[in-house]
Length: 68
Image (cartoon, rainbow, N blue to C red; front, side, top):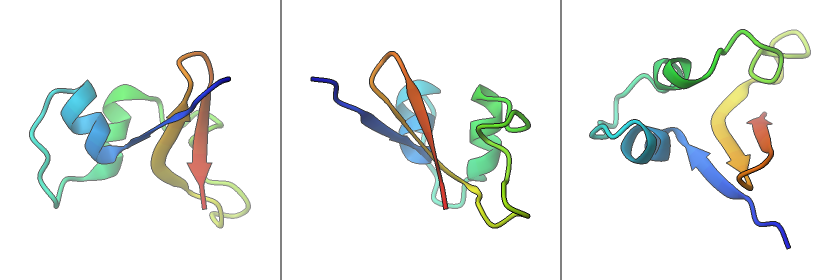
């Protein structure tokens, strides 16, 4: 049974990058340090109607990007 964990901007900052979370942190800048936001999974779609929500899900093997 696979189980996906959610990695949002706060988890990314504190647990992966090892930084203190500040509420007014530029979330996209944090993600840009780890992933290339210009590649297809992170780019805006449908004439900017679908945008990366600064959240991913992973089971350790695969990754899903969340958009809304």
